[in-house]
Amino acid sequence: MRLLTFVIFVSFLALYVFHKPSSFFLGFSLIGFLSFIFVVKIDLKLVSKLKLIENKFALNKGEMRYLKHDFDDQYSGIEYKVLNPHLVDDFDIFGKGSLFQYMNRCFTKLGKDRFAKNLCQSELDSDIILKKQAAINELSKKNNFVQNFQANAMLISEKGEELKNLQNWLNEPVRKLRFLKIASIVCPLISLFWIVAIVFGLLALNSLLLPILMNMLIVGSNKKLINSAHSHLGKSSSVLKKYGVLIKLVEEESFESTYLAELNKKLSSQDMKASQVLKSLSRLLNTFDLRFNWMVSLTLNALFLFDIQILFQLNRWKGKYKQFIPNWFSVLSEVEPLMSFAIFAFNSKPYVSYPEILDSDFKFKAQEMGHPLLSPLVRVNNSVEFGGTPCVNIITGANMAGKSTFLRTLATNLILSMNGAPACAKSFGFTPCEIMSSIKIQDSLSNNESYFYAELLRIKKVIDHVRNQPKTLVILDEILRGTNTKDKQLGSLGLLEKLISLNAVVMIATHDLVIGELEDKYPDHVNNKCFEVELEDDQLVFDYKLKDGISQKLNASFLMKKMAIMD
Image 1 (cartoon, rainbow, N blue to C red):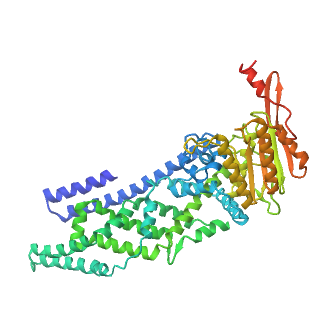
Image 2 (image 1 turned 90 degrees about the vertical axis):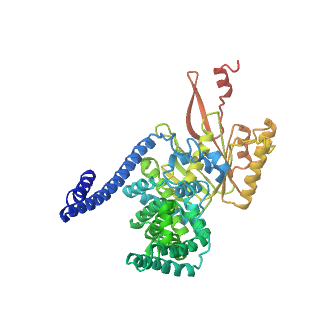
Image 3 (image 1 turned 135 degrees about the vertical axis):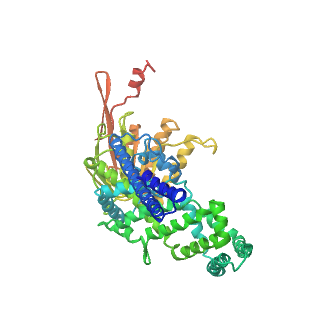
């Protein structure tokens, strides 16, 4: 149709020019031209619609892979490690095979930043957690809305600085451009009347240089102001337009949950909706980008003060809406992480449950709890219950029996629960708390720190944090590995007694069975759990099930003999 209408337009125009200057030919040429423009617009809409459908196809194809726990090629978020290095390392929050890589469904930089931040901090307000639970549950049932949002978010091609530059521009004071306001009206009118006067022979053509010089002088004297605005906002129109589409999707959706309804309500300002305001800014910036075409820019500035016109309109826009913009983007940044958790809830429906918040006591209880990063085909679930202060849970067991995985399982489900997401468990109850851990310790050559000294520094931070924040779950895995056995036993026992004196709640995994004897000294506060290993047909068999008591079986020497490392 584009080809046909264009041929009609050109053919009848050629007949008009070269054959006969007939109004019939000219009319059909005009009809062909208008039809061509109309068909091009329809085509652009269809191309856009097709792209969205392709994006949805890609989304669902990707989700089929997620269901098989095949996500190694997804964005790992490793640069977010700096948000909380110890928590991130200890519980595989970012990087290859991480919680972020498995759960992230954010496509905007705003959404990724907020999602990463949420995974690294504890939400202690029970009301907010419950509101987020209801929001995530609602979104998990709005598959069409979620995928429409994602498909449009995939269209945003950010270089990473667009929103930062917009905020920098908004932070600059709104200038009172009274002279420029008058000039932007008067000077174009003078140019227009001057041109009319030239057309009717009242003025000579070369006299047009006078208004041109006057206009260029005004533009040149404000060049610094114009360049500053354009350096912040140049080439941002497309990104802001697409962000506006995302905001419009949220505006037009009706929500029942309080959290989402409150977010929706924030997307309005005075008599306009946030999407309309961003659309108006996008149009202004799209026009402003004509400056990149120097010939068009020179002509428009010389005759109509083009840059001044845009600058004044941007200044007026900023004065009216600058206070609302950060809030609108903040709302948008919260929606995408909620969607990520909602998709996890939808995909994992048979294996997850929304946790109960236990505010009465510092308590945790879980039935059939597993790690979400493990496929249901291989995942072994465990049940556990502990609480009260102080409380020390000592987990002993052989190598590879499942101690470290259990610690990570508990912490990961707590992180999900405090974000309002469902836990990977048949049932899960918890007290909102902060998490402090000492699992993966790194020595530092640059800081002249040995492994042992680095571990002591970490444990000192744990103790200081527990002293200042009683609602903290302490998770330790095989501490004090950098010293001899006697020192390790004395140090471990001393640390646990210190934590008991601070009324701490502790989960510690260890190979040192002597530490389990602490239960005899503090029977009301210390619990022994273990993972055992069985020997069947000269092979080690792990069931990865948590049991009561102290582990009775070791496997290190057996494995070393099997591998011919020792006789």
